[in-house]
Length: 127
Image (cartoon, rainbow, N blue to C red; front, side, top):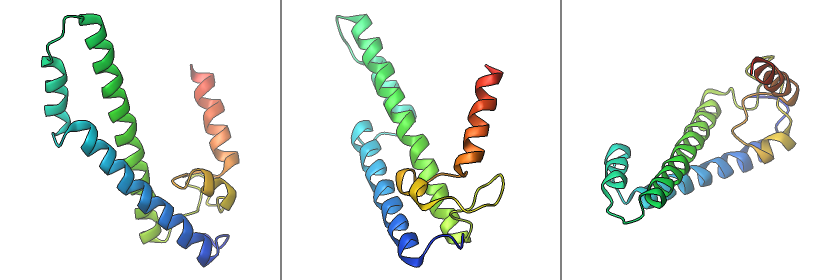
């Protein structure tokens, strides 16, 4: 665990992560109507509608929302795992402590601001 976080800050961040995890699970369950990812996609493909373009756009938007929620759920779960392992709040790249202000905004952050900025610049340069 990063020595930069106080026990109170760590507790607040853990609570935030757990609440977000529950919220995302509930969102996915509601969005998919209790179906698996594959069953939900199949159901969207078989919905009968007179407006094919509208149906395709709605299906694509629904699938994108679900994928974004699943991705965030994975990140939140990984952050909770890092808390259990004692690695939470440490940058994956440089091992420095991640600032509490950054973690308040994005509690599942894996990198400090400097390393994340460098990573984003490198990704943009590759495009």
